Image (cartoon, rainbow, N blue to C red):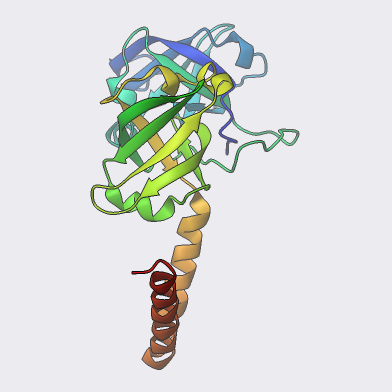
Length: 236
């Protein structure tokens, strides 16, 4: 588990498609350098977030570490597009003394989103994202949390639908601490939605699927009434 507060930005020093070393395991491996600030208490097998993806340390020294990247991870994330010299957000897994300054982040990427625009607003930057999988939009709400490349950010605007999008604002301080700030329209980011929405959805659906049609009809009427009242308030 992570907080979504990026500790440092590291640099990709190697990306091997077929790493036959013991630490590579015969699969894809990623080596990150300039990571000395978070390796002082590292152990083999530790979890570490790389651009919001929970990975396992298989080898490390005082300044760099290696992780294995499974095929499913390559399909779900933007890690496969990294190259030597790419910059990545890094965060160690939470400890018993970690301050929960962001939100509960699993490091399990839900989808990739492309940057639709990056618009200056004073000394801040507003980024608009369009997800590859539009279904995640139902879990993204204004003023709610969303994780972008491992950074916990607040949603400032959202437009639902197949061609929907959402926006976040990066203040000047955050721009210096995360890789997203240097990305351009068209580039991809890893996205993890707030897990609370998923649990609530599953619980509610499970509850009403186990009930009779009569009780579900009552709920449907209540929801319809609320929607009607909202439309009337908006003058529609």
